[in-house]
Amino acid sequence: MNLTVLSFLLTAAVVSAAVAADVLKPHPKALPNIHVPGEVDRPEMVKFIIANPAALPGIVVDETSAELVGDWQYSTHTPPYVGVGYIHDMKAGKGTKSVTFTPTLPKAGWYEVRLAHCYNVRRATTTPVIIHHADGEKTVRINQQQEPEHGHLFRTLGTFRFEAGKTGWVRVSNEGTEANKVVIADAVQFLPVEKP
Image 1 (cartoon, rainbow, N blue to C red):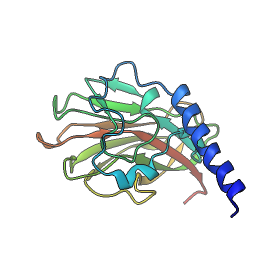
Image 2: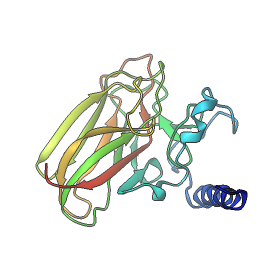
Image 3: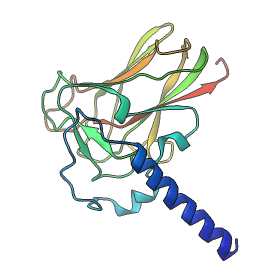
Image 4: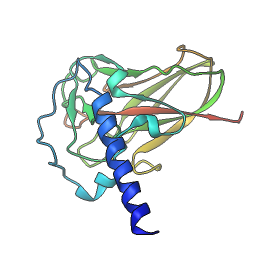
């Protein structure tokens, strides 16, 4: 790759991130980030941050447009994450907090559902995630200390059938999680797939 092409690609990436930052605003109900910009615990993971959720395939619902119940706080301390950052439950109000991600799906069909979250030893190991789909609901408990398999960021929750529109959703809560561990909510991705 010659220097002109490389320079163009780098410029495009910077512009794309800047546009995403201008368009995405933190959730108005979430508490602000207490970390200064650039203060991260894992600098080697910064390159996996997805600044613009719209650049991902499928339908992506970021925390910026999710429904929050209870107090959640922003952070950018542990990359990677999607958009402007991720939110966490502050290890408080266990059993009273949730984040619901509701997509607008263009057509009925089968979708692989993936959840984005950063990971480390301070995370909950029993985070409940409810998937409300066309055939009912399924609850899975995930270990947010484990590295997600897709881009160090997204974890597959399963494949489910959904109706078109806004009838389906995914909810992350802190019910039944450890008192001294943090629950993370960041984004949910819906990828259309063939019927399993």
